[in-house]
Image (cartoon, rainbow over all chains, first blue to last red; front, side, top):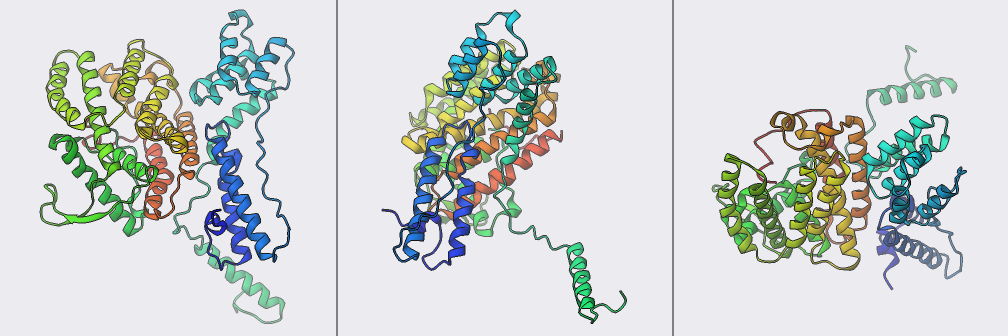
Length: 209
Length: 286
């Protein structure tokens, strides 16, 4: 059995709140949402399981052997669901394939459809398949075509927005330690607050205001 | 290679910077040992990054010693001693260079062809010294497919970018197994796509002038979208790097995270803002 403290990266004499903080940090880092559509999803699930177990074990140890379970972050995938909003049976089938992550099959089916059938939904689904396989530019082209062909469709628009949002998830957990937020503005604000508080109490901190 | 993957040095801790320089110098030295003196000219930041990643993947603990070298004859520098990861990176670089030059012989015409043939004499020597310690077949296959796409004037940026990603994923993951191999493949894939997108954007003007292949010439993509795509690749890279086991390697962790969180986005911003890079540096071959 691996040392649960090591898994969480804390020392044995860390306080409860330190452990909780470390756990939250890790849970955020390895959240399944960060690995959507990644080949490494199962490795992350494994890692998250280890972290949850380690956290539970420490909780138990510290509660004096009691059996309190902490109820860790559950690692359910909040994956995009492609099953909504279709009227065409062929597309419904393709959507099912995409949901089941059978991307090449779905793509083959899409490619075999004739040019006259290639409507907005066709473009949308083709874009989704490409996006799932990491082809960002081609995917964008198809989804934009879909939005253009059917400007009122919220599903297509939502997908278009989500694609650019996925990129923003990156880099949230890294700090360079030098970006202190204490600029002049904060200092002035603090002084002003202090002054106000003092005045409330009947005294004064800065005479002139 | 390209020199797009380097750390932001002022943000490194002093010992991390020493460590990084040690890897860089050590790689140069290992190239001298394993693939011959000439190959040291192909040294690049990208392969220093690869070396750092391979050290984590193969669980190599690097050791350092003070040495002199030709470039710095006056001061002794801390250099990483030759190890498994550095030796591999040296051979991978040699194989990649040789395959690329062989490719150029077939593609170029006139003077370019002659120059490539001349360079190939040296490259072949490097490659022979490197032996078979690299995914030769896979590299050849990927380069051949890239050439084919160039000939067909492929207008999708994704297709060649994916092939380049595959090429790098083969290089990063060579000789590994299980979880490490999968993480390495993901790292290679995202880094490869990232490099290809940046390089296409960076060279667009140059390629227009010289009438060379560049997918962006056939289907222009707004800088904003290129930038989003680059960040998407970085977020995949982040996911894969977070799965690496850095225990006992805090310096390597600092360096690698500095590169992916600061160095790579900075480089992407520079390219997509349309600023020219220092032409003398970086692009020796491939």
